[in-house]
Length: 169
Image 1 (cartoon, rainbow, N blue to C red):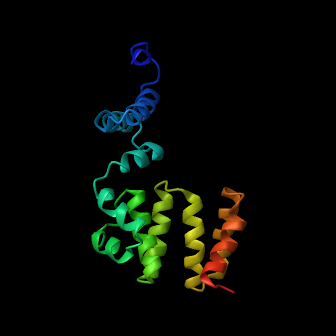
Image 2: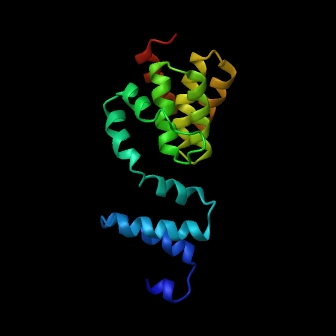
Image 3: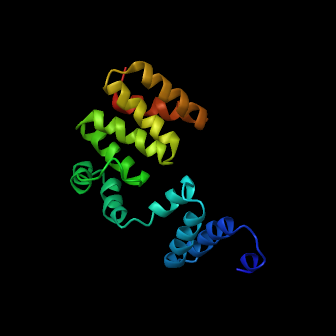
């Protein structure tokens, strides 16, 4: 608060102070500061992503994802617009469509949308790589796996374990 009074960059202060509020369990002030930061820099992806975590729809979706109830996730997010800017919801729907093998073309679009909105690129490239295998887009799968490798040095071990568990040859 003192830094704000002394004229330090308000965007940085609101963004950083929201983390402090969040760590203290004060989500009301954390969200308020994120909204203030977003009003200063309306196109900041990191702030948008952090603000998206306060979306009440995530409260319903997260336990379903944790329990691998992908059909229930799809039911809950069936009206999610491609224009919705919540990367977590876009990713959740893409992952659910992918795991249930329902509308794989839409899953591909939503993985890409989640990536554009700032979702963790490693998991997008990793899962989208397998989706591209399912869609027989081997060139795109190779690209996604290479991008995953660039983001995570342990990728090869993760990939081998996944291939073994899925019996992919």
